[in-house]
Amino acid sequence: MSKRYTLLLSFILLMFLLLYAILSYYSRLATDDYYFIWDLQRIGIWQSLYEHYIEWSGRFSAGFVADVFYKNFGHNQKYYNLYPLISLFLLASGIYSALINITSYFNIVISKFYIIYSTTLFIALFFFLSFDIGESWFWYCSLCTYLWSIIVFIWGIALILSRRSHFIIYPLIFICFLYIGGASEFNSAIFSLLFLAVFAFQWKKRRNISTLFSNSVFRKLLMAFITLEISFFILLIAPGNYARDLLFPHHQFFFSFFLVTKSIVKFLVLYLPFKIPYIIAFSFPFCIIGHEISGRRSINFSFKAFKQITYGLIAVLLIFWFLVAYVMVEAGPPRVLILVSFLLTIYFSGSFFFLGYANKVNQKQYRIIKLSSIIIGFAVMFFHLYDQYSIAKSYSIANDERIAFITKLNDTVTKDTLVSLKPLPKSGMLYSSEISSDTTHFTNMELRIGYNLKYHVISEKK
Image 1 (cartoon, helix red, strand yellow):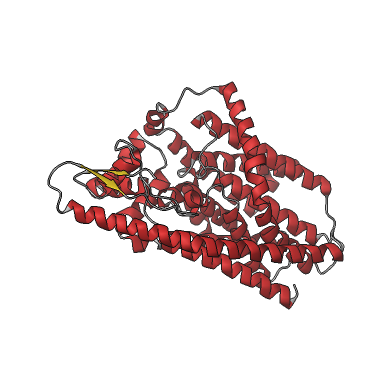
Image 2: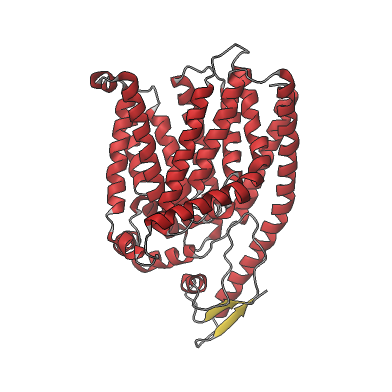
């Protein structure tokens, strides 16, 4: 990349990191966070895990990690501001390690300079392709279940493809896939499907058991798959899953296809068109990186393979949407759909990388790609920095004032009463902790038990 393009792209990526830091700093506890804090203060980590497994959910690994945070942080907000930053660090280091090992495995020569750029671009694209940024990245109670299972999967792939033969590799792979299987039903199901696809491809390619097992990567893949399935099975048999399932409407196999169709329409009309600027800004540079490291050599690029990957992605997304529709009898909340964002990020970044790596774009097109990525990148980042700083700051100040008010009032109230609170301003990219005008709404009840309030609270209607 030219020095000028590198500097401009670096500035855009630094603006993204600044935006993420600002949002992390102004993120606040919300809804279910209060419930888990109260629950852990009441019965502790192990009893809480047991009761949730029996009465609500089998997500034992994600539940344990989340409980550790809640137990140690309590109501101390400044510690929770580190939570999204920890997620970012784990994601960045995992992607960096995975890219190092993937390029080494496929004999692609690439400098650490380009690995760092690719890592940051991938994270930025993943971030902006999320269906709801606040719910997926800054709602503390959802992080360990959805985002972290993807982060740990990335680390697991990095370990599987590692050329190191250190004895600690296998225990780490075991821990990674034990966590994934016990963190999210939908993510585990799709990751299991991807494993089976890889096994089928390897068998078709070699058709020899002894040859397969002589390959260290295959052995690690097999161990990861077995661990994932055992952990996934422990999650699925939890009595809490079946108790919670009673709260959903009756599952209907054929009605689920209607919900899948609805998801596809929403994806094509309400989601994808609005993500085009981010795809241009953060996936186009992968084309430049691919072109630079190819050394302008003529490299074979199979459009047949590209079409097969595209069809494979579509098939995986359809299966995922069907699973969500059948289990939840709805299109699914945004935090569940973060796996779709992750797969799309891999698809777009990988496609543009290999387009540049195979030199399938002429010089005029490269100039257009460079110019458009810089212009749109600057435009979206300047807009979000200006917009989200003021929104997030106002929201966090109002939220802090509310918490200070209700906790102080709790010291003076002597009888059960109803307190009406000033509505919170909009939260922008953050997940809002706003409550309802109905005292029986779960957000109101969780805020009340989270701070052990002696009175009921509602939010005034705007």
